[in-house]
Length: 113
Length: 109
Image (cartoon, rainbow over all chains, first blue to last red; front, side, top):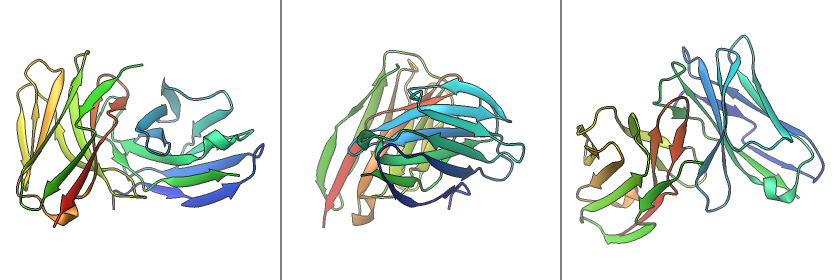
């Protein structure tokens, strides 16, 4: 158990819908990262937050957004969902802004039908 | 974006054999990380490397941070069936970790 908690573990939704994925980082970690992993694909970095502020942005679509709340939990919002958005979405956390040893949650499986 | 070349893409080995995989990059990094991912689960950190030339072991696993800071190696000795999974290298500069495409390891009992 890495200490990073993600909910929901699985969800199925229709195209055009919007979903929110939630992440609680490890106790004491200030940075939260979101990654997308499609079938047989590697881990694609989406976005990083540190202590409530956006710090780095990767290949995140405009239909996707994220935020980190004062209690340090984070949410990834995916809207106008398309079939190609079906993937495993991972949250990870680390202690600091530049602390590069990150710990992953178990992921949220999103299936868009 | 940044690309990491991880090889081999997949391996089938006999139980008890040693395994070696590596990652290379065109960029210099400050940190190299190795993760293992079991099906349907999140990647689990195996080894983290922070200095060029550093050699670190974790049980039967040994990883090295290349002296040029552009590569890293992971070795698994005396493989066992539970070593099956996908191994990812990750390299970190500032603010984000980039991952390789993974090495899928199958161990034949």
